[in-house]
Amino acid sequence: MKAAKEQLEENQENAEDIKPFRTASIMVNRVCNLKCRHCDIPEKYKAGGRMLSADQWVEVIRKLDEMLDLELIAVSAREPLMPGATREKTLKIVQASKELGKIAGIVTNGTYLKNALPEFSTSGLVLDYLDVSLEGPKEIDEKIRGDGHFERVMAAINDDRLLEVTEKFFISLTLNAWNCPVDVMRKFIDWMLGAFDEPRLAVLILYPNVNVPKDLWLTDEQFLRSLEVLLSASDKFADIFIDVFPGSIPGLRDIIEKGYLPGSDELLRDRTGMLWGLVGENLYVRYENVRDLMRFQVRVTPGGRLIMPRDLEKVDYGRYTKSAVLSDGFEDTLNQVLREVDAFDRQIDPRCMGQRCFPLCRGDNFRCSFLRREQ
Ligand code: SF4
Image (tube, helix red, strand yellow):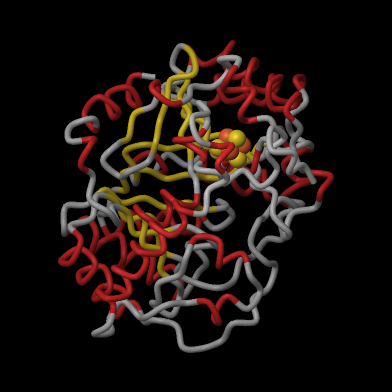
């Protein structure tokens, strides 16, 4: 995986001294057109309140960059390519980000992608990355994401304009109990290798919170069998990486101890603050624990307010938001978040200390079998 390897090598500069708040993660609206089974945010939010206009989003991006000198601006969560005002905001955010010289990308469910391509082409914008969700072969994808999803994504993939609007195009798959069987994974990987000249795959390990039905949660064994399939095909991909949230894998500690995934001194922190490790040839893992997400990301709600990573999982997320980016008190709020990160570090279970999983998890695995937290 040349691209990820190069990215890691480049990003190691000053790895010991990474400033906080490197990424702005933008949720541009509160709604999505799909009701995917594995979605870890509520189907509907209770939160109301005014949403930012496209022009206000531009102000937000400029202010954040002026304060923080961001590395990356990502539009993700809910569906950022819905037609109308949402898409207009997304395009303006990307445009403002590129004008500031930032890395900018979008994560979309792909249903409106073909429909959005002319607007991208007209704007002349080229994303640094575009992640489009598919959950496996058609029958599995539609079981998880609903009828018609696979075909709509395929319509975009078959459109020649797609690769003109992004530097890198990723298929993004959320690994769960329904799409992890070996035959399903192999069929999907074979399809990807046949469909793309430069296949790029992002595998998000299901984040199993209260919004996700338990029949989708992964076991350690299911994860390990899927990892074998990914390893056996990784040299044929241009890019392939796995996103692990500590709570995704109950036996994360033992899996690292046994050397299936990298831990402690095998990890590198990139310029966005995220921890990475090499799993096998061309296969990388990125770990996302709450403490790092709080320290290195600024997550902004549709109303332009700061919110902590886990609070968007709540139906009434509006009650948990912090100050508005465009308010005078925003800098104080960021300092308060850093103090919360320090407090978070002081609450870690002492049994985690010294484990090879500790730097990447920081006690965040709420299903940890080593600590007997299994649910
Ligand atoms: S909760 Fe502690 S022991 Fe369990 S995986 Fe995380 S750091 Fe390791």
